Image (cartoon, rainbow, N blue to C red; front, side):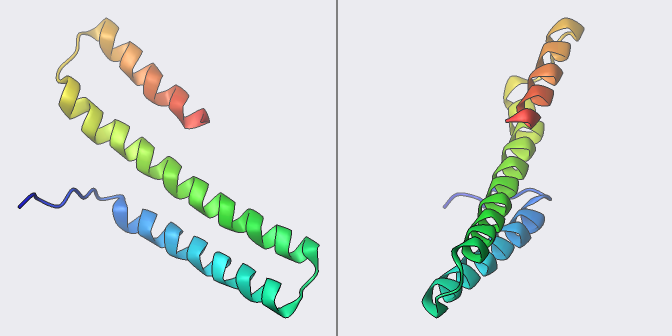
Length: 92
């Protein structure tokens, strides 16, 4: 049996995903109730944003913890390149 793979950031990511789930459920209810398309589109934007933020947090956490463990100690020049790589991924 494998050990669970968890990070300190996972509770916050779970919170974001639960928020997205709430927005999605609201969107479904709005569609069922025949609410205006503009309202529904705004709610869908909230769903998309919450999922996007959860994904971004997960990827950043992975880079900060898992990648460093895999790569191991780096010299100053390579460390700079790795830090720059992590920083640029924040713009994805």
